[in-house]
Image (tube, rainbow, N blue to C red; front, side):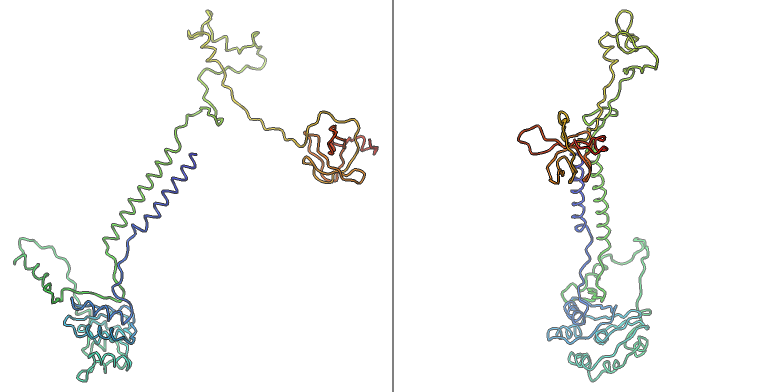
Length: 402
């Protein structure tokens, strides 16, 4: 029962751990925009009224024909007062859809080592209907052929991120030396909350999706570690309680050896040493004093009790029985041949007729099929089974059937 409880407890703990792992695992934030040109246009057109939109092309973007609703989103993305910024990192080909986004953007950051793919007439017509390509500008005409990022920058259509993107590193300053009203920073950050939407409210719709917050990942890892520690502690407690205390040397019901009391066992009699007349162990009388008390002053009954030997039960393997045990072997038998195994009943052939026989020698195994046996009728009147006995060696050697 202890093993069953241990396995049951282990199964419960493993089930809890498997069930809680998905709950504690960090979940990545869903990508706000899809990967197609229509998804980018729809997503950007929906968020640009609340602030600037920044799209980073991390892979070529295919151009596809837009529906009427998607075409309205494209016009909204292009005509909104908040800026649309498109970035093309190093080594990226824009694709036809990426080139269309570049032409729609108010801010273009293109690495010199990029490829600006040309626009087909269908794409130029779509942009012309949205007002991107007009007769008074030559944007669509410049991308009839493939350009490198450097050529696109040299034409004055984009800026190099190496010279137009800056990083402000954190600098430790003394608050006492800071000049100005501390509320100015809050006022600047709060600018644009009047419903019109300022440039500080930037919604980035990058082609590679958004990354999960690092804080959530750290907390999830911490909780997972604590959960595993608790599971290990619970498992150790269950194993320790299920074992229970075991007395060393104590004979239990399962046959383990009991501890012998010190000095209580009888001394082993050496070879040639005469046994006392009363049949007791030599040490039995030595432990008693002349006045009938033990050497340590205890009563004779107590001393005799302490001198008793510990008995040990020995298991003796039962003798294998090969057949039925009968009272005595009959005097008159006949010779037959074993045709099927006698375990203990089988068939023997006698005068070319098969008879059912039972092996009647429990202490010996029956012969294999084809071997001779001596058979005799059973003493019971209504029995149609013959008794089979080991063959008599002398009779079979002479070939004289009895």
